[in-house]
Image (cartoon, rainbow, N blue to C red):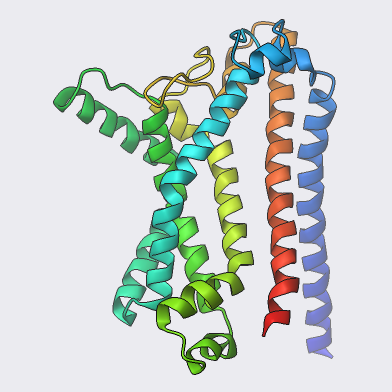
Length: 294
């Protein structure tokens, strides 16, 4: 009787917590939609520049979100370009090659790195910039390259641990099928284990992309500015949607500028939701295909 009472109380408490969490999420999303949907338009993105001219980089966009969107895309592409090869290789090494003590040590290290606040990573990137500026070239300033390297360091633990855990969670039957048929360890990893764990790996990659797209503290200290335009090179300053939202929220002068900030937040929310939707779809697709192969 007492156990049933505790079970009911625990179930009620769980439902209350779930309801509060879902309500909070929908309140935040609803607030952004109500505040920002009226501001979302081609004018918000391209201002008075024709979209075709802006997309072809024939004319610079002043007062629109297009430079911030271009900077965000450039930032994500460069960051993932740095983080993906090292993250995947490290995850494969920890899951398939590392001895137990090495695996335990580096797993703990990467878990600690994953919990480091992004502002600390931003300060680290800023310190690296100062070092390079004084000791190697006075032409090096906070720029797209430094911000991308800092963000790649921020998301690297997520990619490593996701890859490692996805590989380690595979059943023994999947692991032993190819070696029993004469495949080498390397062939087994690349032809069997990686495709079998691809749904979890891709989910981690897409979540890392979302982290790169939404982080503000790192880019604020490593090169993001309010009016840089479309980045001309990896050594130039850049605009980004998270920093644009922060700037508008703290420095707006009238109601219209505040509405632009809400519109930018809604666009960033749509981009993040799209990334999570892609992650969910890819994960389900691989989950339905892989079991049929074995």
